[in-house]
Image 1 (cartoon, helix red, strand yellow):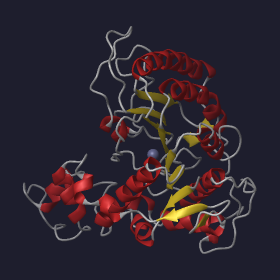
Image 2 (cartoon, helix red, strand yellow):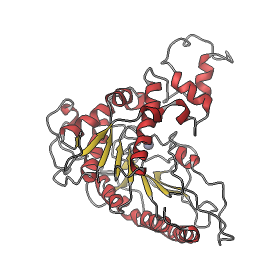
Image 3 (spheres, rainbow, N blue to C red):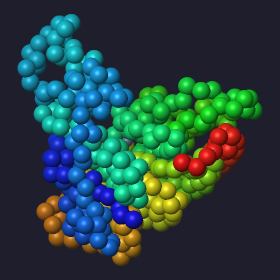
Length: 393
Ligand SMILES: [Zn+2]
């Protein structure tokens, strides 16, 4: 079955204007196109380009989760304009309103914001609809994955594993899907498992965004479906390879019908926002290898972008991830970047390799073993709850 690739000129144009990732969208899509990884018909070795359905980015769709006032404001927001001379203490002024809506600091309003918010949501929901209808086995949304605000939508009775590999904790998604149910340990009664299990692998340290990022989920937590696996600084591919056993245990226990993989790549070395990552694109724990491990589960999967603030490295990692998804094993980190608009950004090596970090990985065997021990107990608890209610979907 096909891999769908969510893209349209309007989505790319709007995503290119996002102040935190200016120009990244066109960089990523141009490289993937130049490598021959996408086509209109999804022929062998390519993903099929599908445009987001604009109806899925309407105000009423967004308001199914987000507050209506916020959605209306977002879809009408203008760039920095009329109010810049306004006094800060004008209680009802536009600037005050912007601040209430969180549209300040590194989330400023920009002219394409209404189109951006609407099209990114439409792209992700279109991807989920393709999976739910069985029209694609995998759906890629490199412009999606904005996990500090994103809300997916659960399909009735299906279990969805949301796995977040961005260097930042996926606070928005964890909060959106946090189960109100308490699951005591040992279990009492027959509580139903929630439709979504969120598992975020991320860097956590004092002062690193977001401020409320949790530490390791304790084995006896009352919330075993909202999981956090924190990393110390400079987690290398070897560390991701070692922690993967914990991810596998949780997946095996939860037995998801769908997977959403948030593949933010701000954990690559020298990311200007991530700063504390040393992930890579080679080896067992590299970005494409982990995508391959998720594909090996054989579960319909939406693959989303997210962080990644060095546009050329994000394009390299996501191009190699796309190659894995469509079975193009001729494309490797050593592959030359083909001649295309934007080729200059890949200096000095002009290959798909992301240069490794020389800073020592601070993740220790003891920390990873502690995480594995906690996740072993958590997986057993999840399996017990899922087994009580399992039925075919
Ligand atoms: Zn991030």
